[in-house]
Image (tube, rainbow, N blue to C red; front, side, top):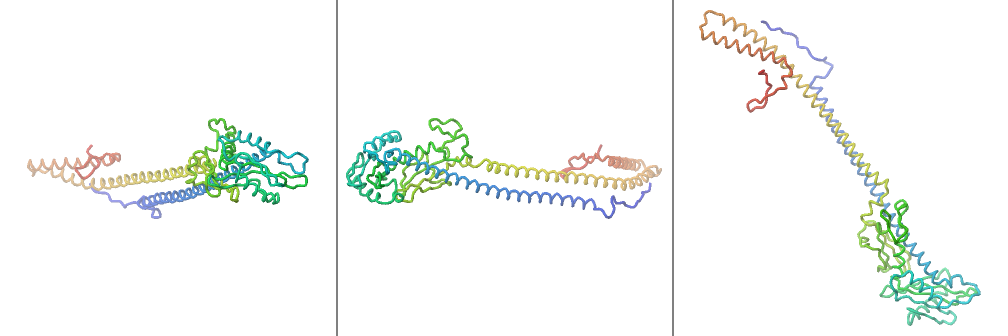
Amino acid sequence: MSSVRTTPRRSSGPWELSSSARSTSRLAFVACTVLATVCVLLVVTLQARNAEEALDEAAGHTLRDYTGYAGRMLGADVLRRFAEQRATILAPIAGSSRRRVPAPTLADIVRLGDAYFARELTVSDSGIGYFRIDTRTGAIEGTGRVKGELATLLADTLRVVSSRGPLDAPDVLSILNRDGGLSVAYARLLDQDGKVVGIYGYTYTRSRGIAAIADRAFKETPLLPISVAGARWNYDTTAVARGEVVNDSFLGVRISDRAGRVLWASPRSEFIVSSSYRQRVVLSTSAGGIMVETALRPSSESLLIPTIVRNAQRWSMRALIGLTILLAAVSLLALRGERAGARARRTEAMQQLALGLRHEINNALASVMLNAELLAEEESLDESQRERMVAIIEQLDRMRGVLRRLEKTDRFDVVVPYLNEGYMVDLST
């Protein structure tokens, strides 16, 4: 049997890439895909981080604005309540200019003042006192705290103050001492010609008076914008329902004098010193002025950030995670496809190799078997030589059976261990 030689034929024309070149290009494509995925993830991560930092900065500005807003609101309400206090107690003197009415007595002021302090103060105040000064004679009439040296000091001070114009004279004075001082509220009584004929007023311990008003203002004044509190704000301080907003849920407040002595602090406000969102409002630059410090509770920061900011932060991270998963899935699919393609190309190469081996070995085996059969028929061979020739023919026939099994391409997937060197294709059956 003679072998047949044919000219090798390429599977594609010279203008196309070879199989190895196509494999290399696919690997390069997958590598580029993975590299692009990594680059995109880095860019997206950087942008997401920048966006998150910008959102955090905007949220920080918002929180500081809330804190400053609360301090200004509380300070304004405290001043308003002090003005109401002064107008309530000194009501008989207010608007007395150029009127033909009898001057009020000190007892009238004492009656109004005692009623007000009994209603507003939760603890007694030894600094409460009332006075009336006749600017024409210099006589002073005082009760309560206004006695002795204090009465003389008030008379001398107020006679000097009353000589100033209405716009230059304050309505409240502060007398400082070791206890934080006294506050003096007064009003001037004018005759029909607009001349000051009398000064009426009262005193109280500064820290207790500020604490009483600040405590009520802190409980009753909404110190947060509508965008935060909304309809949940609780205006009834006697009962707080679940889900309602109160100032103590978010804020800590401390009121100090110009010397830094604390006059009043809201409950559980020790975090003010360490808060990152602390604002200070100065209500007056005079020696008797007060400062209002407000700070956010650490647990309230996330609650006060506007919903749109929280959603932007949340969805930016979700978008980043989703994009990461999508790009990772694309890269994995590309790698899986390339691995499947590589296995298919290896199987095709093995098939072609097996076909070539089968063709060449089969030609050689045919020649060897022909000659072996001819030799086995020679009469000159003895019995032992003839048995050997028969054994050779049997093995040649076995090898031809193996070559025929090479035509079954599915047999390439059946592998068995081969000694300690790895695995081999099982062609035994």
